[in-house]
Image 1 (tube, rainbow, N blue to C red):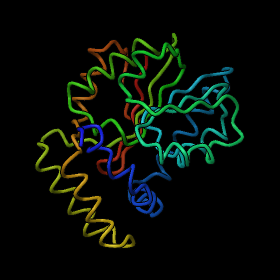
Image 2: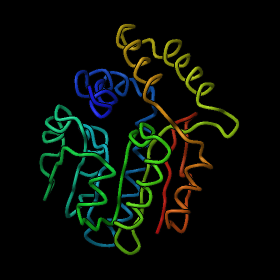
Image 3: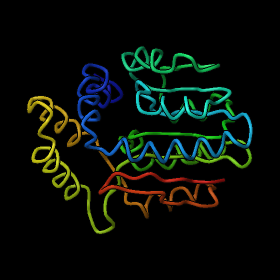
Image 4: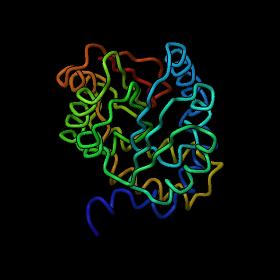
Length: 232
């Protein structure tokens, strides 16, 4: 199995696990996506806009935000064909939807799209640091003038190393996420332990600045779950 296949196995084979966790709001999707909706409504008020969704999954949580502030064009990118198949239903009714089974970094760099907003939800932390830096560089180059990147993701505390973060997050999952069957939690824990590589907030801001973003702003956070806006 390739690295690409390995690190997306949970979501390709068992997308229902993520949905079960998210349905209980353990990762604060409701609160965070309410703010995302307001951000998109503000952008839509300025005129037609294009949105590129990196690691879009099945788009279940972004779809209501898009319905509230419909983009003129939506592009979704993900490695999971299962999730992309589900996304077609969640995105039904939007104009000009295109979905792509592809790598996030490669797609941004090669697609030629000039989106006004790049969105990514709980996806970037799966990348190693060097790939995150390349993603920021590709996004900064791809965005239309005045564009911005909205990132929903986990981040370590400034004093935490990865091992300490992972131990704390697994404890949170096992002790607090009790509405999800234990077998699902253990499968999700195995995925987190093997494939989650969150940066600190400061580290993300440094990468964005080095890539050419002019500003980075924390819009809100709930424990390790953050919503960040990077502006050109």
